[in-house]
Image (tube, rainbow, N blue to C red; front, side):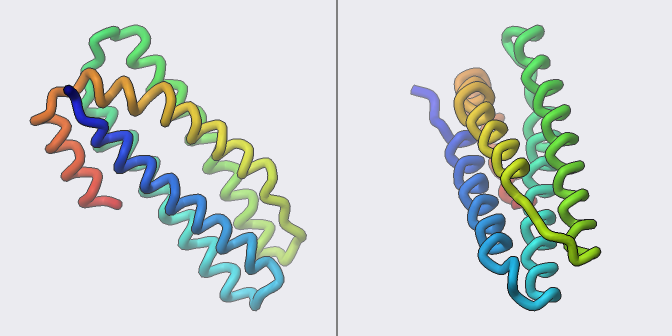
Length: 144
């Protein structure tokens, strides 16, 4: 039976990202520097997560069904761009001292997380042999 190693490690990282975003939301009325530091920690970890997906996972994966497999990656890359643009916009709002609304970002992240956990990672875990998966997990852990 194939392991769910990729799903497991990426779900763990998703949980960290949710925690980092909650830390930001829980400190919206805190000192500017505290809020900025928490936001930058969230942003940095989100960028690492996307980097892992796009570099450590996708570049190593050769899908059994080429059309569907590469469609997942194209779709994820587009979603990454949209999410990062929203994060950049929120970062600028923090810098300008404007009111912040994280609802759109949270919606984007939750949809993205669900898509990855239901459609992408299970396919990767099924199609990638255990040796390659082990190397992939090592690369992921090097970054995360």
